[in-house]
Image (cartoon, rainbow, N blue to C red; front, side, top):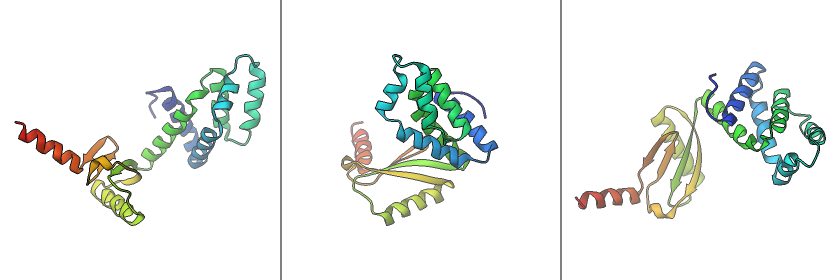
Amino acid sequence: MALGGSAARRYAEALLEVAVAENAVAAYAASLEKLREALGPDSWRWLRDRRMPIGQRREALVAAIASEPKAVRAVMLMLLERDRLMILPGIARAYAELVDRREGIVTAKITTPVELDAMHRDDLVKRLQTASGKRIRASFAVEPALLGGATIQLGDHLIDTSVRAQLEAMRAQLAR
C-alpha cells in the first residue's frame, strides 16, 4: 500500500499491512477501537504530562496495553515517545476505513426528515446496494428541515432527493 496522506492514515496503513501478514485484520480493528474508547481525556492528560517521567508513563502504558497485538503495542509506544497519542482516534478511524475499502464496503450517511423503522432502513440499504453494486454500511440521521425525501452521502457522492432541494431548484429556475 502506498504511504500518503495524514500521519494517522500512514500509521493505519502500516498496521493494516502487518495485520494482513498476520491474518489478524479483525483483531487489530478490535484492538484499536478498544483503545480509542478506553483512553479518555484523563488518560490522555496523564500520558502527555511532561512533569511525569517518561519512564513512568511508558510503564503505565505498557501495563495497560499488554494484551494488545504486538504491532499495536509498538505503535502506541512510538506515539507516546513522539507525544502523538492524540492521533489514536484518527488511526482507529483510518484503519476501519482501509479495512472497509479492502472488503469492498462503502459507507453511506442517509438523512431523512423522520426516523425510519428497521424494515424501511433495510429496504433502502438493499436498494442502494443493488444500484451501486457495492456492499454498504449505513448510518442514519434525522433532519426535519428536509421536509420529505432523503439525502444520501455515499462515499464521495451526494444524492439529494429531498423536497427542500427540489424546492430550491424550482426557486432558482423561477428566478431566471
